[in-house]
Length: 105
Image 1 (cartoon, rainbow, N blue to C red):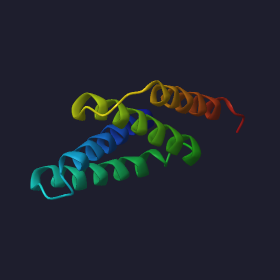
Image 2: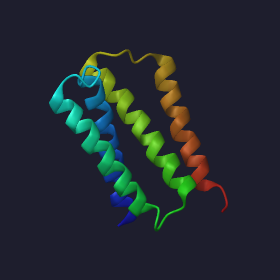
Image 3: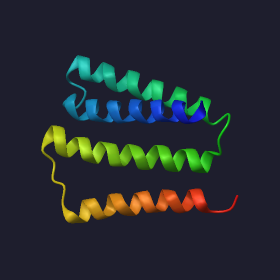
Image 4: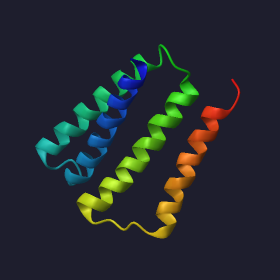
């Protein structure tokens, strides 16, 4: 159950961050509302996840997957560049989280 809540926290955070870009500096009310609601839901779900899973692992996964998701959506939705260097950085992030998962407790 904790892993599903973590997925929800990540999805909420990514949604909020994409809405932050779409809000034009929080000047557009609907995207601004999505920003506030998305971050609130994300942190609430994250708090629930931390009841069951270690904070280091949870935060690494939440931040890494969120960063990757926002980078990909930024390219798809806003035409932001996706260079070889950015793709390499995404691979490094994934590798770092995998190593953290494999590290002994």
